[in-house]
Amino acid sequence: MNKSVSIVILDFLKSKRVTENVESILQQEVDFPVEIIIIDNSVDEENAKKLIKLAEYPNVRVHLNKENVGYIAGNNQGAKMATGDYLLIVNPDIVWREKNTLKKMIDYMEMHEEIGILAPKQINEGDGQVAMTVRAFPRFFLQVARRTSLRKLPLIKKWVAYDEMQHLDYDITQEVDWVQSSFWVIRKPLWDSLDGLNPNYFIFMSDPDLCHQVWEKGYKVVYYPRAVVYADGIRASEGGFGDFFKKWTLRQHVKDSMKYCWKHWFKNNPRI
Image: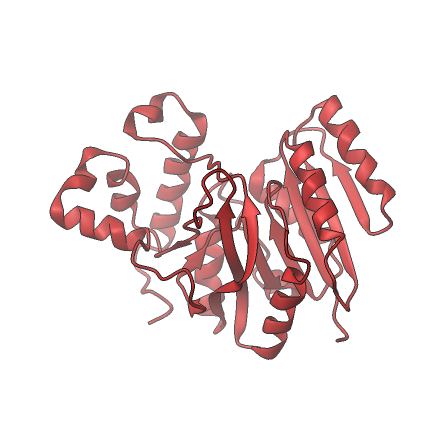
């Protein structure tokens, strides 16, 4: 295979998990070159000291930002440094336990040129449950309703269940609307043609937005459970309506959701 891979890991105060992540990547059995690019938004001296040690590996680069530029800009920054044919956006808490995970995913992409984004099965380490990383394209009303008692009403409960893809069989390879960007493989030329993640968002909603554009470009977004990775299962957007006034991340999620829904208000589902 005459292909190369770039893996971008954006860190915010998770140097220990990033170290485990990188060390597990370095144990992957592959027949193509792999580079690892770590972007650090922590602006923390102790965190930085631990990350810098990873740059001792010949295929690992570490870039320390002088300020927290956010999730979108941080990943775009790493992607601009990437030289591979395939780009992986990987959360800092991911751990690769099977040594053939990366090769499985790249091989599958090579065999299916119609796939633009491929995502593996994720297991939450805490409870061993499959992370629900697949979603239907967002609707703002449901983004709000799912965090209030409205989600208990019969009709809305049904809509929320579909929005969260609660019916999905996570053991089957299948096309999906969008997958969370906690772990993505995307073709680098496709990423470049879309200018990466949309900088109009700060943290959230850039992943459904990019998946929407991938479908519009004529490529597919596919969930691929034959490849499995593990994560800590902690979500920045967790919380109910009452947490809206306590958590900045939840308020930002609502703001980003409004931006997404306004942008796509009059658009049809590109999968149809």
